[in-house]
Length: 96
Length: 215
Image (cartoon, rainbow over all chains, first blue to last red; front, side, top):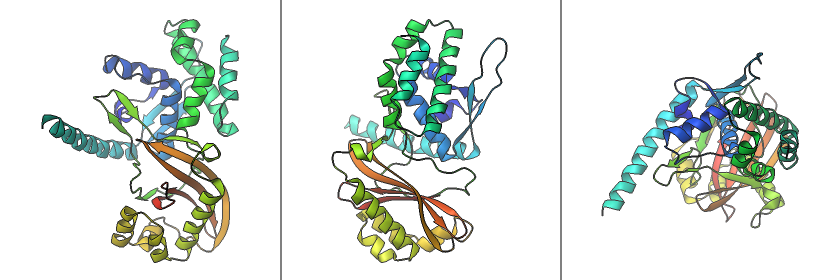
């Protein structure tokens, strides 16, 4: 869900996704490369994201960018609903 | 350890297809180059990523056993029963819950031959539209779904009529672990007269059908 959310505004490459997750979660969520790329491959298999390699330039090498698809946007909306319901249940139980 | 040797060791320890290995190798190389460009030293990157065997294990645990073909018609999610087909994150715990997969040959509770035979049986029942027999080998949740939904309508949503069944082209078996539960999953590419279909068939530890995905 977080990966899909981070890809909503623009396409991003793996390293940037790792850094953003870490920064925006204030260090609470850190993904290892193996976990992140596996998740990206599975999201791509589902058709929720798509990828492309950029051209290498003199200044930097080629990067693999990931972008969200319309199906991914729909999936994100459904995931957010599921998450909101889940977190509400947890909150109710913790308040008992 | 030097960077090339590090990536080579990761690749050597991967259990996925050669195509996927090349993809991972290329992406890791690009990722490391980006990190160095951002100011990280190779030593710091290596420490952050961990040992190459650990990196490979993360890939092996999280990657599925097979990959659906490209250019398929829109996927049809029939039901996953008690298996979540979405990614859930427990923000309070700060960790990511993702189904973890291992090759079924490494499973301590599922037998490859039994899972494959049962998955073939599911496909046979679907081909013959024997939905009552399908319900008999399913979990209660799956039975409820099969009662409430028309499997014929679901198959029609794949688009082109399948035509006669010709056999299976590929079979990938793995154990999936998620939220403390273990499942056996078979991803089978079945060939029909007019098209091919990827089946993802999931069983619980009692070998009851608990998930079915057709694409």
